[in-house]
Length: 197
Image 1 (cartoon, rainbow, N blue to C red):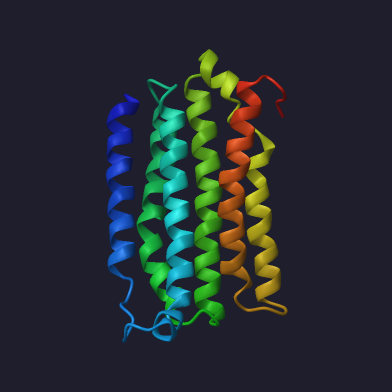
Image 2: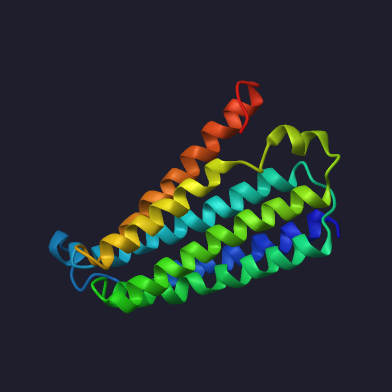
């Protein structure tokens, strides 16, 4: 399958998910800082979800710039990833209704774990579908750094179930920021030929 068609479809789904996210944000009851502050959980959850969606879009954009065709395995895994993306607005809204609920924290965290795992599997599948692509080999998408954000989320689970209930969604925020920073550092390192894992 040509990546241009698939990328267009994925871009549309991500754009719709981002739109749904912002439409679900409630307005403050009054035009005061206090009223705005009471909705802080909504804004933090929105920020986490938006950053995740944007990072998936940006990472896919960079990946599909150097890949022309993908096989069925890559399409299926990316299809599963798109399905998970469509669930982000639902679980984000549920989390915002009670950030101190173990159930909403757990499902939010599990969704982000699933997205992280599926994304990494999808990238590896794309890599395997085009094994002789020099640009893809140089980009080194098959590396261990992708596991760091996943480890951070798992630490958040430990915090939520022991001492700090909002630990999962705070760890999701840290993980997505780390995902962006690590990807940028990794890309620069590979471009400069400094290192590879």
